[in-house]
Length: 587
Image 1 (cartoon, rainbow, N blue to C red):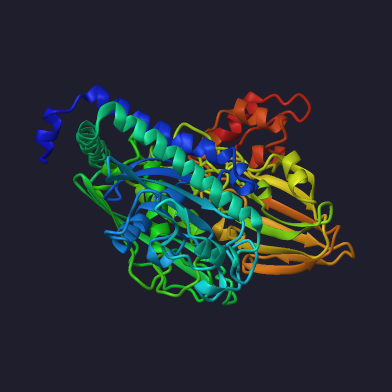
Image 2: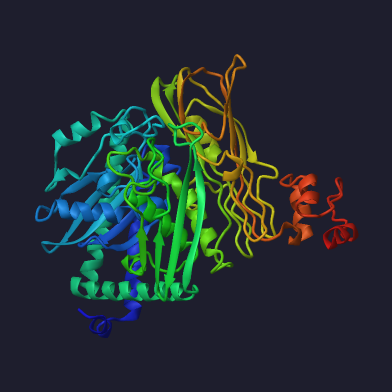
């Protein structure tokens, strides 16, 4: 059906109603999951996405709790549709996590439910969520020592766990015999429930409007969304824009440093992101599957355009992403890839730096590159295993943008604000570990006319004997701190240190950020500082009263107020010495 003939039978008001209804359904799927999962990774930190897709695998709508997971669903679904061609039935439910058949990270497991209406496949309801364990050599899914996919996880290519409504017990038992924690079974059941909610509400909508009317309005919605996206791209001056950044430590080669390079070509209403200059894949787990690269590109570019663009297939039509096979951002099988999601930190920085020349008021300075650890142990209070990704201590600040300071304590850009830290009290209930300190880190934000977001300083105490800490992250090298733009200053680098009860110290350096530390004694202390985001514009142009207020709050030191911001603040009354500040700034 042509665009013109579609538009003739479409009511624009009903099209908007359907779009909002689709969005609402994906949100209902998320609420269902939040209230029924057992792992804090899902119920507290919201490390998942929900989505609806049409029969062909095109995005109808999604709720991007974690954007890096969202845009990795469609490539997996396309492979699932091809794999089961002619063998999809009502009541089927499929699991998938494989990075080499469209997936993004082995720990991100998709639950896929086909939706039938009057005997016809019309849609798919899908939840993609980070699971507490997926097998492999190390509990929790993060194995910095991995050299291949099988050392990271059980590789779940598309497999039916329900066939025509009947549980395939043999398949279910085979999968979960290779996964350590019983809670993962319950969380997959919760994801199935969320997909059932999506199916139920979608069918209600078809009952109300009819399949023909729905399909016509969806096609019109896709076309309208494409038009919106093309208008955004057209507002970017034509040209080729490039930038590169580095990643430090691949977990295998000492002193390793890898380059990510992007070339962005804008041609009228089309845009292409080409990563041809990126370094080859690493022997460790610091590689991003193509789905992760696509997701990182999409989430970064969407931050530079109209936020009201609906999240459907139409927005992706004018965008092309190229990454040569065998590079860091599209590794060859059977590479290890668990760290791939976190390369979004560097991908986004490269995109923002490249586009800063073309759309200076729409990009942000760099976000703090995530450094985190996953603690695995046995809770002595209950004699049961636990796993915790230290989101609580690893959330740094975002970069500033024109007219707006960065977000404080927001965390990795791959979540773009969706990832939450655990509630501190629940952290101490769910794990035997204790929080001694968790507060904003003074001077961590990159100074600027608009400053970056604040990072945090955390001190945690291990409460179980023999814990294992799997480290993964970046941002500890001085050059990898979140860069500022247009004269803005960088945020602070990340730091971390483990201190044993006997006083022994393990300092995490810029080239030791991917490792496993085993047999940690009870009473050991973890000291971590998550850096702030980069600043935007020269710091000495910031409102002096805003600087004085943040000095009063303890967020900026008197030294930074003077050195970076050129503001003289009274150390007791916290008032600006306007005359002396004016003289200093005039110099």
